[in-house]
Length: 514
Image: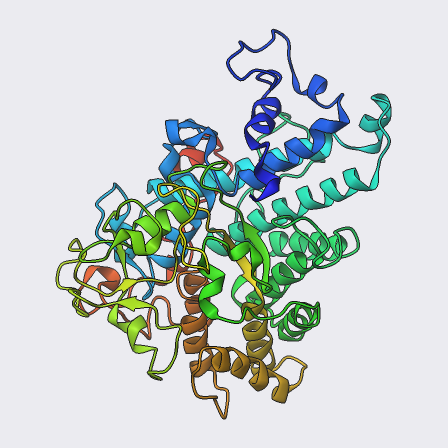
């Protein structure tokens, strides 16, 4: 049980002012508002749980489409699910045969400003930030004092975690959309339409906010599992700095190496086996730094790892081998990802090829393209998760292996650091995978190593952009809608601002090309 989610439903109800959670079948009390909820200090952790749960589920009853964003169905607004779609489907790592509106356009790289997946995620970012802002407004010293509540260390930690979640979603915003509205708790609600921030303004804000959180979040590995600590902030800073040349035209590789090294030195260790990071009991992995938690009974959702595992099963695959009650026959990979595994001993090559063709002639046919067996609702002892429909497998937003690879890349790109250590860290990963060690690091073999280590973990789009291989210079199966792939327009490195937001807020400017 991932305990931060035990009371998610109650937290959601209270946050929305729908009444006390004494009896979920009782009609909400008339006049029950957020001010009454915040009168009880015991509710504060429950409201924080809503912030975390917003990364995993779509709303109060996501299975029944009782969701946070009323303009989108539950399936297209689940944070982790749609983030994964936007990071993986436009790359060489994943294709889907599903024909849901807007979904085929992701791999074809032909999306528009009305694409429901990018639009829903754009709105989800702003929603998550808004929930964090409201929590921060209601937990100031002044507000606490007016209620006779002491500003305890717990509440200080809650505030720091809320700020981290806001920073995380704004980081995803700068990466996926570039220029988005930036609203904090200091902005008065409803006083004016949100102002669009430039990428530089977002970068400056995130850098300052995350560095401030270094001193306010709990030390690494001291917080509850699934909750943010300093290492989560360091990982986000390392990501921000590593991609700074893309985001703001500035080389920040020394800073990227510095913050990746903080994580390397923070006491995390690699899991004994690579596969242990992607199982139903991966909450025991010693290398996970920040996770989005799922529990088959407590956080039931059609998104998250429930989608990731079910959708990857089809053809002649046996669903029970993956701890689920059926396959959805959707997601596979391209021959280009399979080809990265040039060392046949590499245990990270987790593909199912029986009855599958390597080539994809028809993208809608599940048996064309190798299936990926990386994610499972199975425990290390071989038993399934507690629920065969909704999975227990957590999703690691950050794990130690990524810190190793970021440090190596930052140093290779000219950042201050130890080149010998950079090579050693990469080879630690290869040794675990039973692959031969590298003797030298190049940008090409580092990009390939990131693909081998981190595939299907929602990093690939950002990586390909940073290495200059996303829109041109490297093609893969069905990129641009052609079987052998083709170059696409450079503006595809950013998704469009949601068309509905442009109508609602005329001060916003659409990204180039849309």
